[in-house]
Image 1 (cartoon, rainbow, N blue to C red):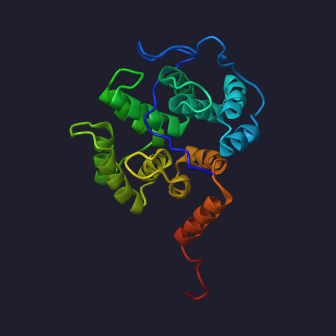
Image 2: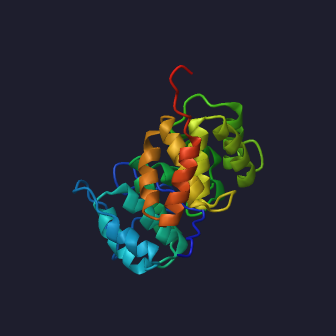
Length: 254
């Protein structure tokens, strides 16, 4: 299966209390696209993600439209990706903005990271470094951060320094390797989208797993969604990486 290249060039709408636009460039869906309805049974993403893995993006989009309309944040996020990349639907950054924004307001961590990047780039929404920094912050629900994480955030948002995703990933990685869960979450998001690093679902899975263990509650849910997009070989490789990261079991008397 050809790896889906997902740029972290996605867009923001702050859909507070419903489909409210964030800035003049966001809009509600055009005719033929459903609005968001509250409630509904837990979504079955299986048919949509199966179609995605088969690169039948038109079918994936059709199924995700229904699930997204029933307020499923994962479906909203994936539908935003399809509009962002023009897969199965016409490329439409403003429509992507709508669905990313709705998912972000429901607490969808990767959508929040994407929204931050869109404010950095000014795609579909006004360029706004402060909004970008806030969405990056909200993406991982961070508490006190180490200097390396703060430096990565600065490069990510271009706050006080020239915006540079490669340097952001570098500093997030250093903090992540020291065990900072917030940095692990941000690095996972960058690996997922191929932002500043090569797109790598396996490494994204690994860092989302560690971030979840470190207390980032949303990381485990995002990892479960990622599993639906990975091949069996990728899942096996990711599981091996996770096992190698586990501390050795204590031995009696040792």
